Length: 70
Image 1: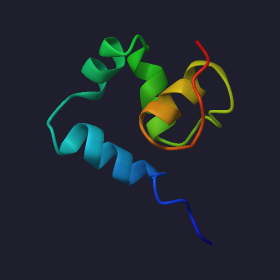
Image 2: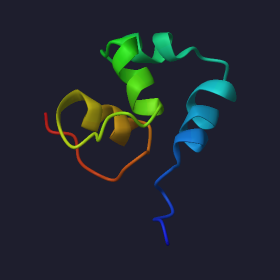
Image 3: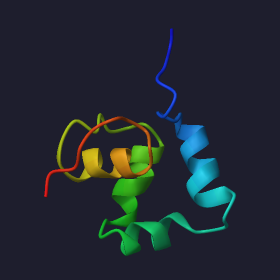
């Protein structure tokens, strides 16, 4: 199974955006206008992230390719 180079796994996204720089998920969520619980659900892989806020979170974290509608 091949995966596109710029798409990260859940573990890679957690490492790059939170663990490596020491930023809490709650802080990132608030800075980007999301509820922390929704970001945690995306990072746990419990949401499909096909549309809406979960899609935007997944794109911003590099979990999927896509565009963010304005």
